[in-house]
Length: 392
Ligand code: 1QQ
Image (cartoon, rainbow, N blue to C red; front, side):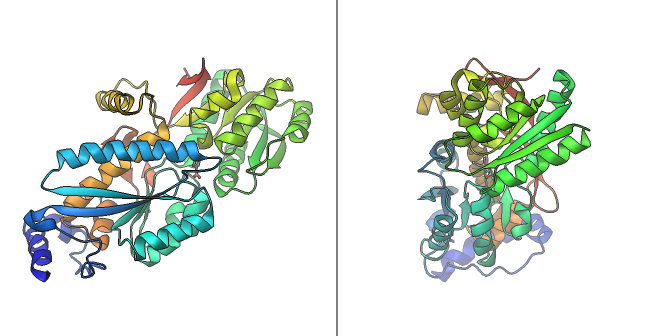
């Protein structure tokens, strides 16, 4: 048993000297290896990696989780075929239902019982704030694919994300809207019981100040609410040039719909929660003109993006959204980093992830800054005819 674990690591020392030296050449204790856990190299040198996924697969945000699962499974299929004999990835899905407590339980189970080498997810920033410290404490890489709030990477050294922070996306959307539509005044509405929505609101407010926009008012709601008439009636009286909405797709779309029903004519700008096609289903015609920023557009004339869109459509019969794209990219990043690490070892994988540079994904080029935050670019899109198109 020892032997089969030693051989690949010796090989990787010989072949991958620069990588290992580059990350300090530390002697890694491969937690879980002896108990048949995360680190295995299945005979002929094939790395066998178990990756846990914690996702919002049921409840009011299930469309986020569904998109993430679809993107991951497509990538898994392609990667296991392409890496035959070198790397095999198993995905272990856990449904958190968007709840912090469930995310914590899922992360504990994946680390301690399933002995995964890394975790992808959880979906919401709030869940990552709750469960990320557990993974970091257990020296297990945890990789956010949709956590866009400020402060995610401050959780710990083992926390990564490829999701474009709202601090990049929101200013891009707001600046473009101001430039093109001459917006001078704004009002805000956000979910005060969701960490992502609160963080997004803070970014919106700061950006409005930087752009010299007049703040006419701030209202809140809760995830789970269905009636927004009181807040929106007040907002109608304020008559802002733009209404900034920070929330998840269900409540966010109902707000957009109600706003138009009440005759609010303000330009509506949303955050990352709106990057899912459910918005068009729920808000219908009211989604016309809705502005958001995203790192991914299926319309992008890029070979890699178009190949992904085609493969996704062939497998699932619909277009991928940003959540599917970032999930897909994340598994490619994991695969590349596992191959560079030379074995399914949590610490080696962490170090190899930290060195990621100029990764060319379907959601753009990705590198991490010194705090493991993604550096990427946002595309600003606008709702038109039941989908998002580039806002030009
Ligand atoms: C976050 C988000 C949400 C929109 C994910 C579904 O960006 O929680 O950070």
